[in-house]
Image 1 (cartoon, one colour):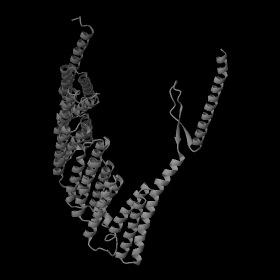
Image 2 (cartoon, rainbow, N blue to C red):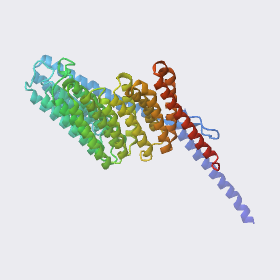
Image 3 (cartoon, one colour):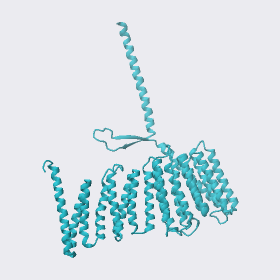
Image 4 (spheres, helix red, strand yellow):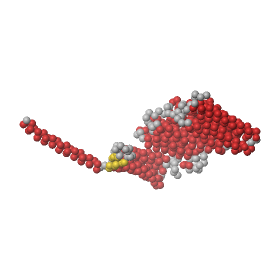
Length: 557
């Protein structure tokens, strides 16, 4: 017992020493945290107001102010300084030409560029981003100084344009090599843009158009090999823009702006661009670029191709372009079939099928002219719908419905009535509504909106067609016959929508009899029309009343 009592004070003193030591450690940690916080800015950002019961109202984000300043000086000032250096050496080259001959001035420019290359190499390990920017500027300066050997100067150093163009292409090829070596998409984009500029500077069809085609092909190759999708989209924008500039007589080289070029090679090159970029949906992604690149590329290519094609048609083929759109339609239709069986995406083959039918519509228009072309366009809608069934594509169905409604609206609003066109619209609207109702599961249609659109179109175009097809004294009788047809369809198919169409047709017929026919129709035709309409109305009323009673009271006769 005595020994235990002697050990107890020692144990307490040890515990006190440990507590003191722990407090000292906590104090040092707090000092270190305070020092760290003093060098950092704490930003309290209010988040979206939480629901009741959620106690998290704010979240702290710590932003290192030193890091922001470092980024500004390392990247922002590097870009600005490189731009200033680029302009400075360009001015130096131009200044040297005022006091030296062209050869010596160009040599001074190349020596200055060599100095930039050396500086970029020397600091490559210490300042990697600055080294990269200096390299980029040096490549641009090489292109600029080489360009001034022949172009945009009064006294060319090299009087042969072909030699300078070859030197420019060599400079661009070297830049592409370093872009691949350093895996720099930015350098490759600039090289592509310089190639398009060179194509326009040559001012020669046999050089410019093949060069633009080759550049487009290389951009797709870079997409396949390295996944450089930004490069590909940039090349697509600028190849079509360069083609537009070329079609407008290449005003960059001092030609009269807006005078269309009538060179037939414009159409060949345009088809080449469209075909090259149309290969992108066939490329396997392999994680190199986002999935959205496929749809973006298809839409951009389709819109750009259409715009440039319109300019080509206006400048060269305004009198006859049916064969152009017929070829486009066949190619796109064939390619849509290929995509259907080669890829799993739905949008890609649907887009090419839609574009094919739009091209076919333009070909039909040029072949038959309006309004006679409307009956072919109406029947074409059935072809598009059958294609949508085969592809199981809701997109094609929706687009076809929009186009059908637009064509019908334009026809009714702006063109005189043509019987075969009216009949074609009636047939198309009726068959389309039946097909959509029959195959709506195959088309994955969740609503009745598309089918209702065709039924509404059928209702109005049926009245319009019969009004112009039969003699005036038989209009009411023909409309009553249409109501009978709707009643029969309702009974046969057990669909209430045809019944409502029949009732609406009866009401329109009655309105027409009272407010139109009574004023000019002969007595015999008037009696016949009224009796026929009355019999149909009363008979339909008796039949459906009996049918409803059977449903409500199935046990009664």
